[in-house]
Image (cartoon, rainbow, N blue to C red; front, top):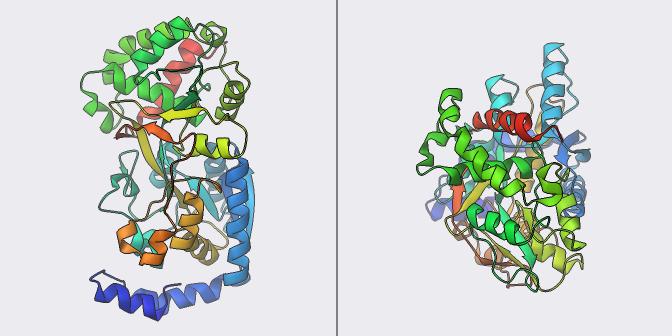
Length: 395
């Protein structure tokens, strides 16, 4: 909660603090006590699961709420469940909070399946970097409109063992040449697994001279004009991929394990700190290096949202606010815990809070960074995934 001392400090510093915090937020916290938040969140990482468990324990101690991590692999299934519940008139929904972004957010927003707006009224939203991080208010080129609260930052990042990959490929064209020189040692997850979808969107952005068309709603006619070039680039890569591009790993975790086992040479992640995290955990060698493409790789923000029929809306807001707190964001940012980059503007924090975000370079850290490229509009996702599945998804 935003206490009086912090409230006065923020207003004195010139930050706009909503008057609703003083009374309305206290009422929300009071209503939240005793409620259970069923938090539907991806569970493909031990670090992520451990962090959510810690956050749930803290929420229980501090706010008297229970957080149940409903472990999922595909957020689209959660969207379908909420849709079905709302259609059937179920008011006490099974989902109170969902980890979400991109096409899933756009679907829930368009179909009016979300509670809110709520995020900008959270006390800790005051510290979000709305000026420096465009993606906290634009989710895959779709305006957030207060319907989801930012949680963390992501950017497509590649990694490898420096003793095996001495010159990292810094573009898709370079990766294709690398695969040609190292046949069978490169692959990526099969879409619609989101790392795989991000990979093929990155290929799409690099396939055209002017990618500005992708930041407007998807258009099948426009896609047909660039599809051949995109597929030609993928064909050129696939012929030298693992299993000649006729099969693909099921998940990013599978790709990472194949890199650790030496079967593949290059891994990929959406968390720039994950390679260093895996080195620290002993799952990758200390000679691991990470990089992004010279002209940039896709970056975005991931969020949490509350379905319109959530049973514990007050507790969901309290938990979302805690996830935005400097303490929770600093812990999440710690490579030894998760390494998920913060959505906060550190200049808005007190000195001791800023200090908690201090990091030192570790083996596996990104040594060749590239700029973050905005995600294409979410409506491009089904067009690109369907095209990929039609051409490459038959195994």
